[in-house]
Image (cartoon, one colour):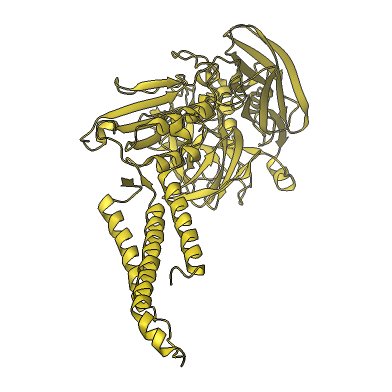
Length: 599
């Protein structure tokens, strides 16, 4: 006989201690009080010996019944299991695949995961007596941690849930301690998610072919002819072997949802474009609907539409026609030209361009300045430069992307110096003087040490590119992070996480970060004292949508989640039999006591 969580010797010692406690209580119990009654003294003397003998047997019988009851209850509390023959006892490793495709529904309305758990329960219940079990999943969310008895294994199976991850791992069986008896390994899976496992593993299939549609890509792109107007591109995949009619819907703030029909070829893809220029900035949701779909997690996806698709920009200059003309080439900009005297009376702009001018106080909006005067908030001067050349520049910086300064001829310039710790040099002379500096501190600022009148920069083909890059960098929103479903962490401490659909999420404090779990596609806003960020959580994986990409044979249609009805499965655990025996002994003790058979 074995006991759940206890060595047999320890269990029997505990049972013996319970019996000893009963004996001790009986010995401490005071004897019944004798009262002398003056009658028939002669007959009492004659019957005295026989009465004392009967009284002794009644005491021993009462003690025996109490010992039986206490021992049975103690053994039942330790959940014993009958030990079978040593030849049939083995170690059984049960691994259940709980990756995202196991959420797919089968024809009976139950998921592949539910079928896998039912098959695992059946295998545990049918195992020979004395078998020990190690139960684990493939997402490393649940495990017994070692070999346990059947009751503990079944409890863990009952607590398991299908996950939403695509990275699955098989337990590292080689790390288990060497066992004196043989070990079997069963793997319950649909075979869709690739899980590398040892060769000596028996795979139990829960796979069944099923129709499914899913969004495999969702992108927003500006129109080539108008950078302020965006279009959504939604790619949908079809896992079925027949063509499917579906409807793609894009919804977001500012207007009613837009829907488009789409026909998907067998086991193919189709792309739908939806204009979203009329939507307000923020999260856009794409959904796909069809008559029959077995996996819901890939039917929804999110993208982020920028708020600043059109910007109000003020050019403050005493007169600079080439600069004004180059700025008007950017369709995103609504340009207003101001003289330096008009600057103080104007406001409400998304960005400023200062030409040989800078106010005494820093504006609240981003700034691009050409040869600005020395100011405390923008740039300090390190001296005048005569005919300098750009010896080096950061071509990988967003401002200088596709911009060359090699052919720029400069008549005069000022050497610039940053005024804050977040200032950096983007271009410098061969001797090291800064010609272009940028500050990443909000609001961002960009200063150029020369103007259009001091150089031929405005006549270069890369000048409009420089202006477009500069305005984009100055006013850009921090792009959202893209994540998969599952356990996530963001580099913000003690952050609050709010999901558009799920609401406030429970978080965990981590060193230098905040952790949380997302089980469905959603759009998240993460805020802390250190900053704010947006997170797009999507599936967008053709390997998930194709729930029929399995190398396993379909499970028999007759298999169900019902427990088997053989004698082994229906038999009551030994602990219940011990409790029933204890109850019977308790009834016997009650009857014998009230009939004065026991004391």
